[in-house]
Length: 170
Ligand code: DQA
Image (cartoon, rainbow, N blue to C red; front, top):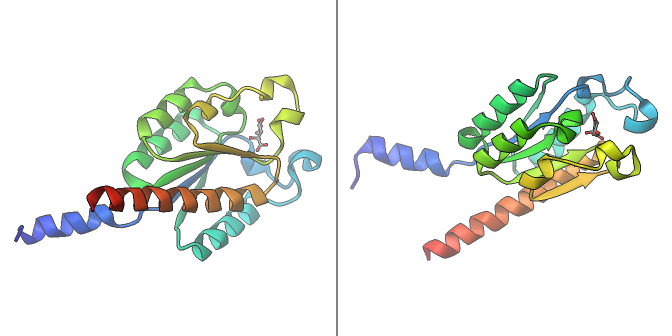
């Protein structure tokens, strides 16, 4: 039998970790920012509905927002050890940030890209996403409900990963 410290480590490694739900620049302005595009719900409203949906699926979420590109990069790096998956609305950094793409690639976690608006109905500079290259899938155009859809998709992805891992051990 391995020593107690090793057994505790083993148990900790298989403990479920939260899903990081990361929000980029200007998303703290939800509710007042271009309501015709982004709606009237605040980021706090969106956080509440995301957490409620996640709880119903047996998942924990760690919901954060930053206007600073480097802080988002640091959180994505943190996710490598501390999260089971990443749901990311990178705001305008979606269309500009190779640093965020590199961090997502290095994280080696399931990633879901998320946007409130349908970026493909908007200006052409919003049609390209660096995040997409590291994402399992993209949800856009469903407003705040997109956060709930992303949590559902993440639950499904993690379930498949877990059963794959169990099958490969059998
Ligand atoms: C956004 C779309 C981006 O193009 C924009 O810069 C945002 C928000 C969305 O949620 O629809 O800030 O990511």
